[in-house]
Image (cartoon, rainbow, N blue to C red; front, top):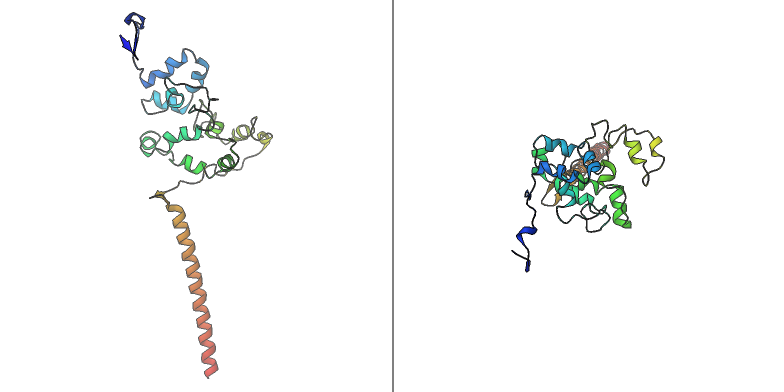
Length: 229
């Protein structure tokens, strides 16, 4: 058999070649070598969705690749810290996937993350600060409602206070507040929410100007009538 210009014996091929594994079986395949990481992944929301039969839920190859698996330290790896946010955005910015899968998960997480201090500091300094996996974990990604989730309100002090982030925050008390800003609405590359906010600001200023103008005109007319009499 000729492969890439070289002759390869058919006998050199494995006799138990099974073809492309089904998405639900990819984790089992990877766990033969990466049992510890696979065990963590099997506690995540992604794995639980796969178990339900949701085949578009993220599995190992979606984040690490299939044949071109690179170390996260490699700048070319999709799991490299500088690329993690874009990696997550491939699914979490996809309206079709999120509507079919998560039912209620907002699809502007990367868009709103870009408004955060962490992202803006990265863009100005070139140094990666907190990205998706720093807060949501790499493999053991769980919803905020899960008591064991890194982003559960009870666990946030520990998550923010871990090594390399905000030492001492583990002793802090969190009173709430949004990490991601509200859902954005874009139309033809225009942020409709901002446009509406600006519209209301202009309308309020117009109404105030009109109101004070009418009051001023009323006072002026009364003064003029009294002057004439």
